[in-house]
Length: 524
Image 1 (cartoon, one colour):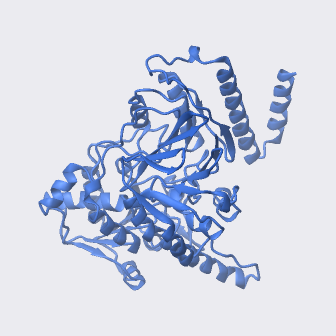
Image 2 (tube, one colour):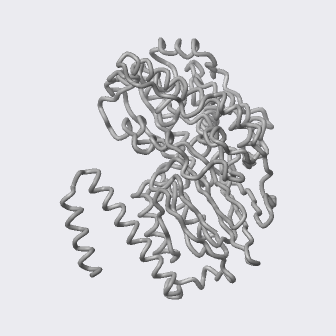
Image 3 (cartoon, helix red, strand yellow):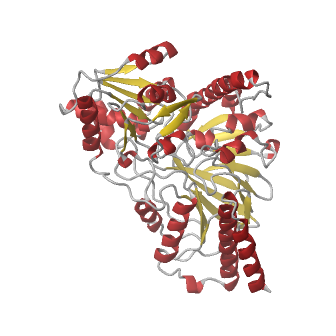
């Protein structure tokens, strides 16, 4: 069996993994690349594998970096089923058409400039209609049930605790009388968070494909995020400005509503402050959340049953006209809008009208991928470009890390340590190089499992294990020489690739030549 890494390698976005057995080829996720230009350009290239050749797709959750290229896959010939949890199925029915619409609007805006310059016009990766066309291929599955998708291939979805309907995917593949088990973590959530349940503990795996977004960081202030939010609100209102919160339409917006509701119920939120959700997508997603309370944790279900989930000063901006009216508001207003990384959507207009105002505050409550507008603002850039216009950054820039829907370094290690039988090897994905290297070192030292960090388009042959050792007995010294040799080779190849890319990016050709000569001399 082969496993190909066609996305989310040494970067957080673009999740796409292809598994090839003797009889089937299927994929886990098919997400949009976000971030720096060279990464985003992958969205426009042809798929590495022929979409016609893929038998089915399994989705871990609805976020666009995991699902955003599904319409393109279908547009270019994929005809199979798309399996996911029932909430993911419903969320994708609003997320994917919205993604297509945003791409159409962005391309239309860029084409006006290209037309005036006499240059070739762009085409969107896919349209809203393309997204609508792929929806009949979605098939919802129930959590925790082992289902045979094809002879010799079984799957079970487990709650990942990341967003509504997010899944850890367990896959059993039987070949030549032996069974191999793969586990894809998807995006793992934090424990003890409102709304969603904690990530499910997995018992065992032959191979684990593990996310590493926060592999080198610990979340701060996880036990007082409501107090932090209250403090930012009071500070901004006292300054006389607006509080602008870029937020993902799915989960992060609902987390904010949960905390704002709690502050209101406890008398800690001034009811005279106007709160706007300016995202049709977030509004639709919030309704889907309300329809699936069985996926919430017990505390949230209890609040809903007691009728303590209402916010009288909350308003929704559905139309473009209603959104534009918000640009006239100068004070006493909280605006929550998508996209969470500020690369598209209505949030860009609210930043355009508030970033330059010292009395306003921009509050980030989610991960900002390298190269995105949100990341540039968080990293302290004083001048950013929005819709072709240079905007000075004079507003206060704040972050609350406690809203992260990703497990941090400690959370990932803690989840991994709960395996009753450890994997043969771990592949780290969904992370920037620094986070992956740090997490890899920690896993090797603390848990003593071989760890690989794949590059884009890397391919691995996977073999079943007759007897998976207990985690108390697995030590590096007991690994076969063949396995150790393979591990060292892959580590060296990975480190050389990273060194080469870093030197090339900085045009440090002399360093490359010198390093290559030294390596060649050592080999000779």
